[in-house]
Length: 168
Image (tube, rainbow, N blue to C red):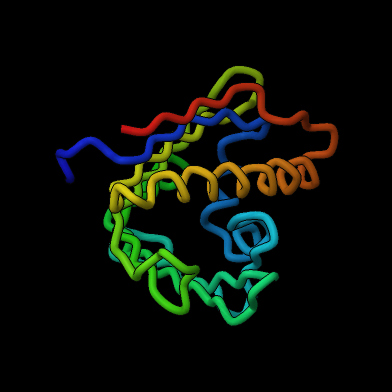
């Protein structure tokens, strides 16, 4: 476990049950529906998961405006607790946007029950300092897409009610 404080920490409440928010991160079809900044997509045939300690998550993210940009993400899962936790080492490579080099980061995602069937998501990332700002914006945009995806799965669900983002 990394003892340094994370460069990125996000706490976000979604108006959806914990098992659904967890599946959004662990089911390839669900992740392909919402992951990445606005305009980016994941070709479903390039998403592969083995969700367990020692398993992995792999996908390719494509930028719609610049399709030659193909970001390859490979997560080596070190700790998984069904419905509660995903922790691993993220390897980012491929044809990346200008100013972003291939890098390795650690990411911890925790899923917590909240009142009224909602879920609090806690994300911590240990990454190069200069990537904290772009990563924060990427999560913000991805969460807009995740809100829409969750609302489509749960008709009548409202958007999130609480958001906190802070950087070290």
